[in-house]
Length: 483
Ligand code: NDP
Image (cartoon, rainbow, N blue to C red; front, top):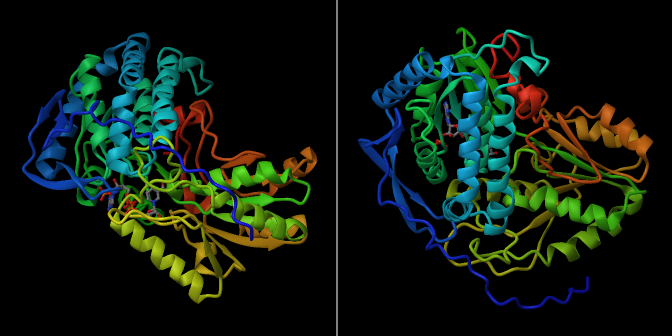
């Protein structure tokens, strides 16, 4: 294959002077920062530098947070009109916009994602979620969800490390708009933007206890899930933990929504606009280092165009700029943690062992930090682990098909059902395929498009319930969500 000409870019580093990271953080309970007892380090995955020390919440901290949330629900938030609640949400959204650079830099330092993505995707979308839900706060009776809408009470929310601020927004904005108060736990690797969000709550003069943030690991998450003072659980993360949570809440009155894993098929029919599709494939699996539950990690190619697509894809992948996430030219940043890197390596090694043919884009990886090059496996069959399991990294598995029905059968041959992509010039084929695919979100001639107005969620082991849009709102109202 001819190597494409690439030009050296001058470095364009974003300054980190806009953020001030404290050496140590506590929890945010009842409107105040309170100190923790035990702490653990949080690192920058691109450099392994220790950024700060994060508190590990135990039972007493979670109890205090739930108590503060209940007090705020009973005393203030449930008594406030939707119009007043909406004003706070608008205020939060505007402050997030005003402090967007600070959020973007902090997110990139703590998570390893490219600054271009945190600046242009994560932070604007997070603010958009607050704006969107602010608009609903005084119109719940008109959402088509019944006329006597009532909040659950206290919502316990547990989020992952791949989109720390955005997942917080997906959880907190609808909960507050619907009239719930919140106890939220960010992932242990990526707590910093949630703690900055706590400052935003103070700045917006949100009544004390409406939002409480406790940091910690899976044990803290389990304390929230099992707390008798919580009425609703909202979780995003692995299917494995989702199952533990489903089992824990089954004998209780708690309402639950679960956003879990995925193994999306991105199907390219022979009549697709191939160059457009290449961009969609790249965006589908290399956006956010592939740490995306709806990533298009299985490329399903019609045989007649398979060679052409793979060749063009390799040329395009060779142009992906991997490296310093704080550089504005970087396309692919650091893998979020050593554990995740080991998991990606392990599954890629299984791909080799099972007969897949690996190709990685030629690129120099930094010596420090956690890195994995953009990689594709061709010759993959449905029984390979890399075709079945969520890799959650910049690794694409390529399968082929002859007839449209074969494409659908292969796409649906997974325990997951979160998202899918279809590339074709024919509207009728797109409509036919989207009706056959068992996936909650289906993109046609595009991929990874997100909007607060659009419901997002999965079938099968990808979860229960929807987030975003009217459907997502219903999950935070009694009697209309997934009880
Ligand atoms: P987890 O599902 O373990 O983490 C998600 C959140 O749940 C984190 O805040 C975590 O805490 C918390 N948690 C962990 N155990 C429990 C528990 N028993 N009860 C309640 N909360 C709990 O994902 P990982 O970070 O371990 O990632 C593992 C794999 O999961 C990844 O390789 C990827 O394949 C998949 N994943 C999928 C995501 C998705 O959006 N679909 C998102 C993240 C991961 P903490 O991290 O602080 O320990």
